Length: 531
Image 1 (cartoon, helix red, strand yellow):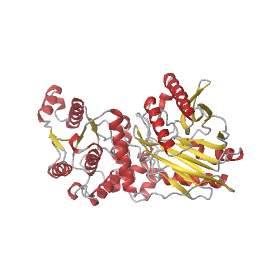
Image 2 (spheres, rainbow, N blue to C red):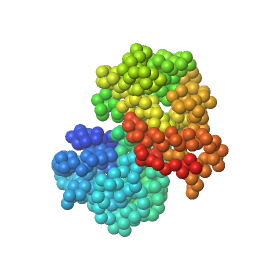
Image 3 (cartoon, helix red, strand yellow):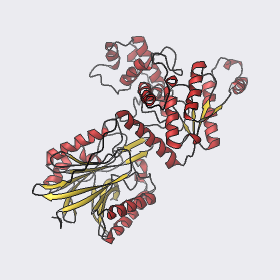
Image 4 (cartoon, rainbow, N blue to C red):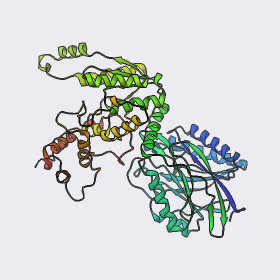
């Protein structure tokens, strides 16, 4: 039983820098000092707040694990000043195994540590084969209060929460590193409600924020009382510190309700997630300039707008290449003018002639312009030290048409979704009507003979396994939905032949499906679709 009938718990919705343990420790100590100034008793940081998520093989590196252990000791010593305790997520090495763990630090010591019990399922930020699971956890005791701490996947099902409740936990705490997906924050709350109903205990969830390697973490941490009502919710996609006030009554602990933020619209939230990812890519990799190609498509206009919002028009440069055609060329120029970004035009005629001269007569009919385009853009970005952005979407990714680039901010969106977001930008005056390619026209860089994106994207979704077809084969399902057989088979052939191109695509933004789609062998002789 705690010494008093009230407790102030601070929620550290942090954005750790992957592998920069010293920086992350300094940030946690700064947040702890801020929490102390607001009278907090305990500061709670998310899963893997010390190292960053997903750590991939960094969590197997003995030097990294040793640095994490030293950092935990340093943070524990810092809590000897009589201020707030600290509960955080970090790797834990024990008996040659690495665990995804939670550490409770207080009074200058490591008071408790718990390894994640549930392995989780493969996904954008789940290293299911990396971390060893631990035994079913019991409560951590903090100044007399029994905390039921769940790490990551421990909160996804009922088993761990029920074990903690049966072991005497008085308050559930979920340390999360849950990636952003449309509707993901609401699904986390629904999942937490289920844990509250099953145990009768209130629950506090703290989630990472920021981005790492194309994965956004949306924060949106919250507190649920035992009556299943939200008492606190932090804003999404923003690093912040929240204070929750807890009081003990006859029915147990209860968080004092606070005003809840207005939920953002879906398009606005998606836009903020895209910006979060691009800013993180720039800042955490030391880029001070962006280079991109404008080709007159809504995706290119959106990419340019994101670049300007992320870093400012003065540090964005657009490249215009020959072969766009009159209409696309005008759209590209209009986009640059509208956004206030400078442009360069790179003539390729002499380079094309030189390549044909080197290759000889047998290559006279070979179209080398796409390869030259890639080479010129990548060389120019390297000379300027700029981050080269690709405007490739998920539609392009699946077809192996991503194009050059070191980062593809729209690669989680299909062409049709990018067009919807572009119209949203139009409504806010950010883009102009001339930048929105008519929906019935084929995209200029798609192979000839494909349908408009509104009909192409549903085919791609089914063939990529991202749209349920029940027990029916994908081809049968698409034909039943009214798609033309010849068109479906053409798309299937293009996707099947693009396996190696997907593997060489620029890193992108995982805001859509839970993982890479259609990871087929590069050499693949399955042809049943053609029957």
